[in-house]
Every structure is written in C-alpha cells, then in structure tokens.
Image (cartoon, rainbow, N blue to C red; front, side, top):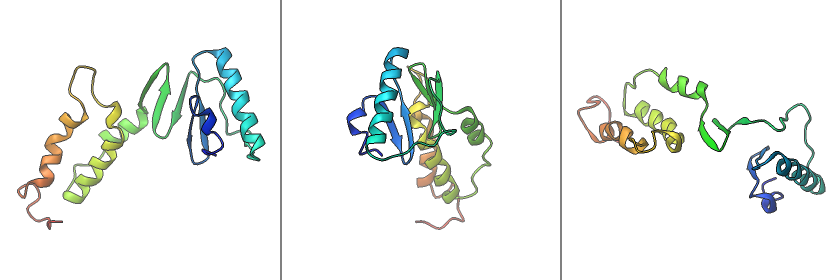
Length: 138
C-alpha cells in the first residue's frame, strides 16, 4: 500500500494496512481523501468499511495522538509507562528504555530538558556495575 501511495506521500502516512490522510484545510482534505481512495482502488486495494474515521480533528496512530498541527503520546500509553514497575535487572531496564525511546520525539518541553537529558541517568546505570551487582555482563 505504501508503494501505491508514494505519489500521495505529502498527505499520507502508512503503516502496514493503516493509512492516515492529513490536510491543512477541510476542502483540501476532501480532495486528498478522494485522490487516495481512487489511487488505492486503481491498485486493486479494497478498503474495509467500519474501520475508518473521516475528518477527525485528532487521530491515534501507532501510539501517538496527532492533530491540530501537533504530535504527542496517547494518554493511555503515558499512563502505562508511569505504572511500569521498577526494573529489577539490566534486561528490564533496557526494555523500559527501549519503550521510552519510542516516544523520545514527544518527550520534554520546548526550551526544557529533552529525552536524552532525562534518560541519561538510566542509560548511565546500564554501564555501572554497582546498579545491578548480581546481573551478568552482556
């Protein structure tokens, strides 16, 4: 599907079988959606009705909330990260850092600390033998 929509890439985002069409104005959005539907139809790709949302102000896509010219993490994803138990070993710490790294582009305030600054103490723990003394070195 991504191949078929390569000409529409300025107004679409694709992941596997999900497509988001975004536009600056409502009028342009109608034109963009019509063009994307026509392009997919010409390629023999069928859309499943009931799994679609049209003209939404915000849309959740790949764990992010997109809309109003901004991208942020979905509230439920943030809550799930906050509820994670404290890691017991380096492997669990790596897993948590990997999850948080997925959202690094939306962490931090403009002009404030960014993800790398906030995650540095946790990354430093991975290098410290004292953090998890019983853990085997990888």
